[in-house]
Each structure stands twice: as C-alpha cells, then as structure tokens.
Image (tube, rainbow, N blue to C red; front, side, top):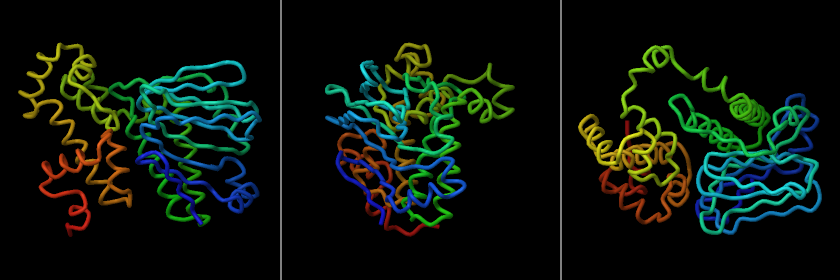
Length: 300
C-alpha cells in the first residue's frame, strides 16, 4: 500500500514500505541506488526535524522558494531559494523552515551502494542559479516523473524506472555543468549573443513557476529598470510581464489537471499561490471555466 502523507497545504509525499525496501536491497538495480521516501512541501511553515542518531539514509533537500536551515553535528548552515544540500547518512542532524519566510522544498531520502558517490561533498549548500541554459524546469519534471511513477504502484518495472530516473535527477545536481551543456541546442549556442531580453525573461519565468515573482525581480534579472523592461516586454510579447507569467502558470495548471490526479490545493501550491481560491478565480478568468470543470471537460 502506498502511503501519501498530508500535512502542509499542497504537500505530497510517498513512503516506500519496508517490504519493498527489503526487496530493493536484494535487487541488482535497487541495491545500487533506491528511494526510501520522497516528497514536496510547499510553504512548509514550522517544518522541523531533529535526529539525534544517524538515520542511515542520505537526505536531499532542494529549496525552490523561501528560506530554511540545517545542522550537521554542531555546524549550522542557512539555506535559501535555489539551493540544495545532501545530509550524510552517518551523522545526527536537524533541519527546519524559516519562521518568517518558510521554505518550499523537494526532498528525497535515498540509499544504496552508489548513494555515497552522489552525496560526496554535497553536505554544504549548493546554489542553482537561473540562467539561459539552467534547465531548472527540466529537473523538476524529472522529480515529478519519479514521484508519479512510484505513486502508480510498486511493480518491479515502476521501481526500476523510478530508480533510473533518480540517477538522472541526482546527476543533474552533481554534474550541473554537463547537465546544462547537454540541454543546450545548437541553435541556442549559435545565437546566444542575440537572445532578446524577452526570451531571457520568459526563460526565467518558466524556471520559477513555483515562485511569486514581482515585476521588479523580473526587471532586475534582465538588468533593466521595471518601467523600461515592462515597455519592452509588452511591445514585443503583447502582454504585460506579470500577466504573461500568469498565462504560463495557467498553462502548467492545465497540464497538471490533464495528466495528474493532484487536487486543486496541491496544484495551486505548486504554482506559487498561497490562496487556492485566488488561484481558482484567476484560472476561471483566463480559461473561461473553473479548474474542476476543466478537468471534467472532454477535449481532443
């Protein structure tokens, strides 16, 4: 039976049963690398864990919004949006969300013979900076594919596929330069000097769908003043920057409504909306129907 725990609004998590873990530890692929727990906590206010004894598992925490902290032994580290770290499997630790600006995190507990290879040197905060070829949204898509593959059931084929994706996900963090270069098309490489300010801004939007981004932050990313950037963007794209950002978010919401069984609260939280009622009103305004009606409508 798959246990999906609920706690924070929009939270999703899966705990792999001990019987399945015992099987994986004897399996040729699973013994090399396997997941014990996996989840996503949006705006996880008051999230806190303290373990006074070693857990025996590595823990990856990837913060995509807000702030938090963690402690390994007597050493404390602060974490902010765009940073990740991997807790060692043989040390006591504690971690928690910031009280004023709670973190939104993707997290995975993992183990196996190859786990120390992926975790080596990752115990300090590592930053993933949005850039033209950062592929942050691609990485999140890999995580989601792992999650929904496991949610579909613990067949050996599902487990093997999810673990194969886990190698890719961890590799995208450990070998971040190679991951970025592999995703850069020849067209992007040859035209990088002529990328427009609007393409850069749209890329930034797509890489930060889970955040609440202001016009000032978008303008700061491009190096323009808010007024100048807004004028350029609206003239080129035909929409004001924040309006266009909301259009992209609603497009992503439609994809989740079509292809997942996530509820409205979960989709709302995943797209950076603290208020699911506001999300529903915005979706209805843009799409012409509420999310529940969109999910039930026949298309194609």
